[in-house]
Length: 274
Image (cartoon, rainbow, N blue to C red):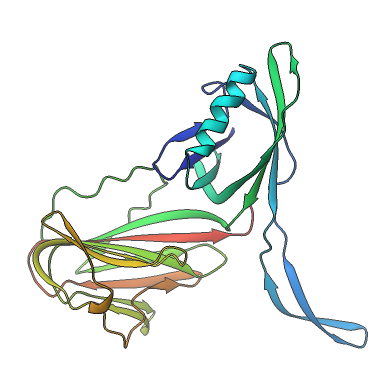
């Protein structure tokens, strides 16, 4: 069974089902397309570039509560600074960032209101996988406001295997918690070093967040409840905002200390379509 729902920037969910009284009657297109660039050689074409165009997603909605349901949906949209549309099949969910474009408003029919919703598609379809490397014994951790399909990977001696099954380079969102002294992360493909993150931060107990997604990149340290920008504390000889191409890679985490420390890795996979 497939499900559609929206989640906004504060984690509030709007489900297109009987719980909200809003049903999807039709879907125009959730496939994908490419904008290709070619070089012409007489009667032969060679593709030299491809891009994912900005397109729209169209849904036929039925508001079972009529105008009140329509009003409630618009209130949700107006109060949301950011929207992600989730598409779930057999408990496997992917999401895409969207922007509200338009919604039609018709006459009531038997107490229900039928409308056409148009959303601008702002990203590839995405899916997140989470991994963890633990040094020493660490309890507790971050509570995420959203539910994602997790992949729990086996880690040993500060190492873990991570996987990108997507079509494009996947950003890694890193969270380090505990004691650190100039922590370092290295990504390997086989025996070849692919990329490195090196930070010049020391603490007996802090949380470091390095977010690599291109539309929201940042590096911060949270210590004693105070958040500090640590962008200037990176080693600029390395990439630091880490990405991995399609495939399997070894990640080595070195916190610089033997005390309790944990590194959480979020791999954000990208897909052209469902």
